[in-house]
Length: 241
Image (cartoon, rainbow, N blue to C red; front, side, top):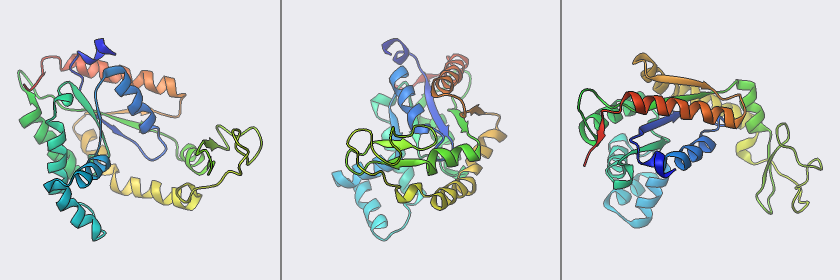
């Protein structure tokens, strides 16, 4: 990992619906390249907990049950991307969620994060594509143990005894988020809200789609190949000092 971390990987944007495996693949990217995974949800919680000015502003909005406005979210993301550990690259989790946010990110990266030599240093944008029925299996098939919190899948990774945890024999439960009707709404919301982000990058010829129906290791290898190729093509871009 140390060898990979010494390279300038640049920004990585990982897109895909719930259940596509973004969390699993993000961890593998972090391990290989030594770059941080940046979650906007985590950023909000950290700033609120620390009582920063941005955190106080966000808390007022969230306490009203409203979404944090883009201007405030931009300040949070910009503050994080300026940190030294982002020098050689980072993975964005939960951002951008709209085409407007993607446009802001492009402008920010071009203006502030990377020094330009011959060309811009855009993020590598990877979309994990999974068949709809496969997503339903992955999400609606999940069962969890309320005692040890171990997760199973009745289709893909079932317990040895139907309905019971392998570890402690506790009866498995279906979390509200894993009920089929809820899963269907989540997938529909993704299509409506996040699809424009993929369209934005596709229109610029920057979207790489990977078939994530395959085994995890095959998907990981494909992602690494995309990142390595992108890094080589933009090797003349240096991180800002």
